[in-house]
Length: 286
Image (tube, rainbow, N blue to C red; front, side):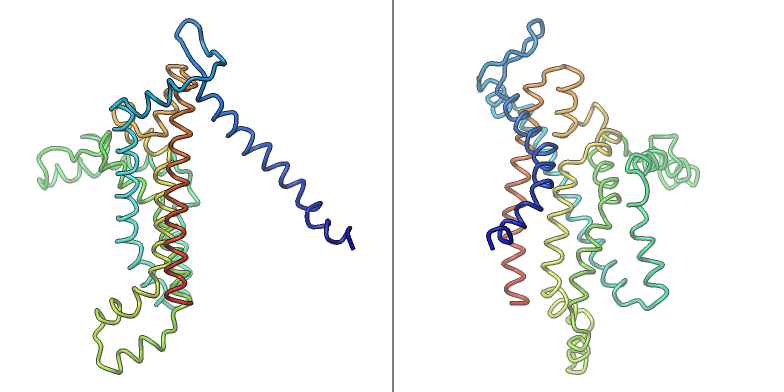
């Protein structure tokens, strides 16, 4: 009997050990590193100080980086919600084989490297040499190239394109639980299409929208490749800032502090949002 009770723990031990080795241990070492001292000539000193944390919390440069990171992540989340929710609703109303075809189109960006997708946006809008800017200027629509590279607008557009499938899939999953007969009953009672969407569809798919928003926000705030290519060194976010501290200035303790603070902020936001989603699910489906 005791062996049967201990079997689940014994079976999960290898996975727990692997998780601890590749996730918990590196994170613990990063946290410990953030309390070390660093000097240009003396390197890293294994002493316990709060210098790096004090610098991150008091220096306006770091505060600006974090504010920009979460501002861009919020804008990306809003943009994916505005565009992704109608996409998911239309996809849900399609019939085979069109549903499968357009689902593949929506999931297409996930099948391509994020670096390749971001470079594609750079080729389309990258300054006066970008394809779209050259076409618009040749047609006389614009007199100067639209700014895309090294702008927050470019980062938001590129990240929204990369993360749109996550929002669409989350909302589409919520739509699967929606009984179409409820919409038909509302139409039979005289409700217009806008009223049906606003009063019946949106309240029931709101948990899916919130779940997709949590995923998109977390991925946008922690993204590295797209901000590094579009933002470059002129427009840094928290992830590229940590990268520069580690590999350019070689101030590993300060880079560790930035990385740990970003992780803690994301965990707090995700946990709070997840509770909101669970509460919403309980209200709608409970």
